[in-house]
Length: 503
Image (cartoon, rainbow, N blue to C red; front, side, top):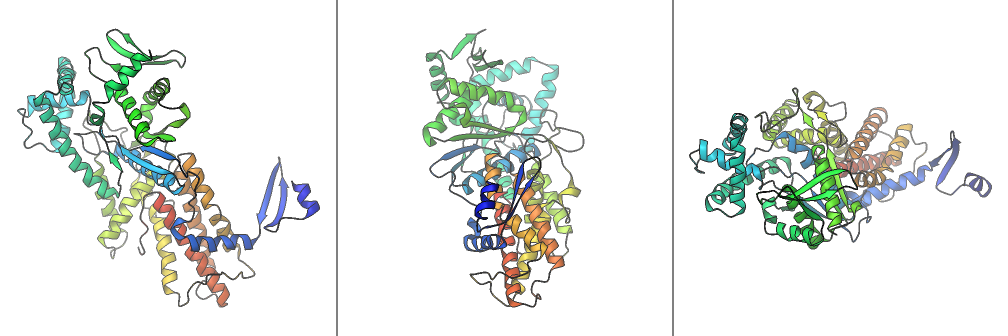
């Protein structure tokens, strides 16, 4: 290619090419090409960086999925914000996106809660709160450590729940209603809206259909009184569909869930944003789904996030050490207010919540992260506050300008090194969006935005904008400023973070 170009001349959009060891080809685009990209940004505005890559295809994204009857803990932050960012990315790439909140409102834990409520809350649902439910759940595990027979009672009560026992159903419904009110408040604080909230209980009447299909296809076999699917070819342990007492399992409900989603939405991809501790479960579930003819293995994706920790390690509801997400968000808003005495409460909430979300998203989903308030609010480093500050700076420059940006940007000569660096970075945004979506890695958008903001602030500090002198130079630099602000806003939108006009 290089020799061909050398003999016939470079394409009109290429300034120069260079071969570098061990075999790379470096291509420099002409400034005119880069500047035309600015015109594209200003024309497409909030659509810049989007594409039709997924046109005609549907993806179902399973994320957040907190457990009923427990407070929304910091541990659910990762699935919620990473899942929402992946949802936004795929929507931006032209896919029809379906977000599902798979609420944990079924299972043996409800047998445990029913036992706890009957023993230590007089069997009454009146007066129950999310905090009381948490304490009862913790107390059950403390007592069960001394009296293992409580676990048998819990299993028996869950079986009653499945068999539609009226007392069990009454307590279960109360727990669900209390929890949904709690979750609604937290999602409003986070600025998250999920298309569908379908709990495990939604699949109650669909589970046996899948189990019967597994029997018919001889995919499931009996083992020690239980019904299991075996995976000898994959060296996975068996996945249980029915327990020996006839109760259904999480595995069976997940397969019923896949069957329902396949029938309703016919997705090209089933994406699950769930913690790394569920890795084996999803390996088994996806393999079982393939055996049942519910899809091809490449259609199923588990985006496995690492742990989020404070000092002292992983949180556990059983041990009563859970860190409530609402407390974290409220503390973040308080810290955001301290950044400026003039900050209004609304802006403080945007900055505070954005800081928490970005701190999570800036890390690759698979990594474990340690919560760090100082890094979260640093104004000169990789943080949401820094990006929001840069966006507000751009908007301030544009508001102060007495002239409008023309439809056609005049190419000025010479172009400063800072401007060239910005132009080259801006040109990469659509590619970064595509890569972030296809690799399920919102942190790539964070990396790009931080790099863009750094380059803009360097340009801002070294080159005059409104006082550049030459009118064409002023217009060009205003256009560059406008493009940077638009891309930061678009990028933050993909991350589920607001861009305030002022800080």
